[in-house]
Length: 126
Image (cartoon, rainbow, N blue to C red):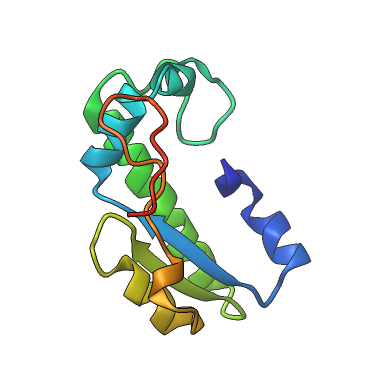
């Protein structure tokens, strides 16, 4: 998780625009649960801040973790005004337009990848 490297990223790129990819937190939990053993690796890991070993068995714990990490990015950028923050709801149909508005790159360049319902990799250009 790059959240633990916020200061290091800032030190190397003090004027960077940060992109905070967001989606419905419950959908993120569902995806983590379906995707092989990713959720189990989260709960077994023991060194991530704000997510001690064994936490994550309950969906609410995963949602709280997800929301806390997003808030940490927002707070960090607020405390370091040399950065711009672009928040993109990646599960919304206008995500490509949001990226085009922020970066001037055509919305057609921003596609949906890794779209699946079963935990298997299904790459698409939706």
